[in-house]
Length: 123
Image 1 (tube, rainbow, N blue to C red):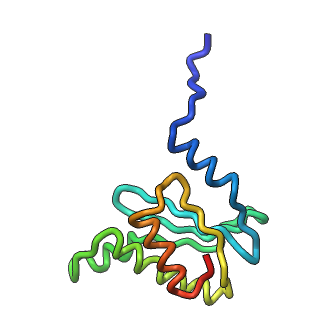
Image 2 (image 1 turned 90 degrees about the vertical axis):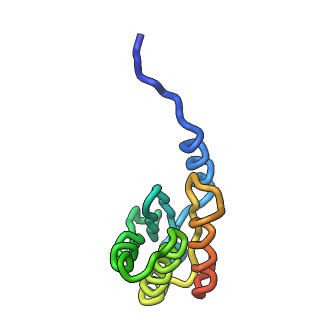
């Protein structure tokens, strides 16, 4: 008998359920959020071509401002999202599909979505 486990975790099931309903195109790419314990990563993805158009994380923001001022994780994600908005406006992307992945819509994930909306991106 094989010892390979084919069970999926609850997080993987949530991720599949969310991703099955959304798809990014060239005109309306998908904004994917990955939230680790320490940092957060945001990607803009074109699923029709299978390419990542741009990416940003709060690693550099937290390291640059570590000595000057203390930021919470949510505050550093907001600053990273503002950088992403500037990149998206330069690339003339006005609307996106928001992909929260396996995470609940609160905290850092909610802050990313609200910052995108306040920055003029249609989510």
